[in-house]
Amino acid sequence: MNTFNPTCLLLCLANLTFAWYMGYNDVPPSIVEQPESIYGDQRIPLTLTCRATGTPEPTYYWEKDGALFDVDSNDRASLDGGNLVIESLTTADDGQYQCFAKNRLGTAMSQKILTSLAFMDQFENECETVQTYQGRHLKLLCGGTPGVPNSNPALLIYWTDAAPKPRPITYNARVNQDPQGNLVFSYVIASDAQGYFCQAINKVVGSSQRSPKVTLMVSGRQTS
Image (cartoon, rainbow, N blue to C red; front, side, top):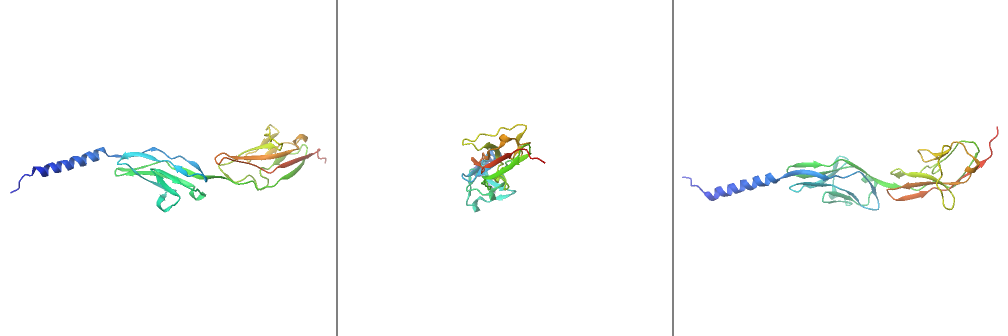
């Protein structure tokens, strides 16, 4: 004959109530702070931000270029909460990143973002003298034959004269700068004869460089 055990019933009800309460208060993850595309600087750690809400508190992981980014096997990377921190950046760290926040109710994912290492190389050309005639079309190459320094992101370029305190060249219908940063004269006049510098700026790395001087010599009009 079975006997009624009120203690067992109470314990069962308590367990069911606790399980219902815990499940009722669970909330799936939701990303509330998204990472953003960014240029990395070799001199400082790169921090990709990610924060999510949820109950239980979410755990985080990241993917790079669609594959799991294993923080444990990368001695330059760590997780600070949901933030991914990478030190001593190299171009190998360039790529597409995405944050994931997970708890027992599911997984939330951030937007995909791109990061790439910002850098600026040196000018490789040497000082040169360019000779031409009045009335001729002319293009002065920024950086000479090697061209402008490699850079990420693209350089801001402008030209100056070679005075002790260089002054920006005034652009007009006759003298202008092409999309590659070269100084273009639709026709040359005698007063164009002077020294020129090509100035290149990478705002992300805070670097500004001046090319070696280009000296323009202008002769009278060429006769046939």
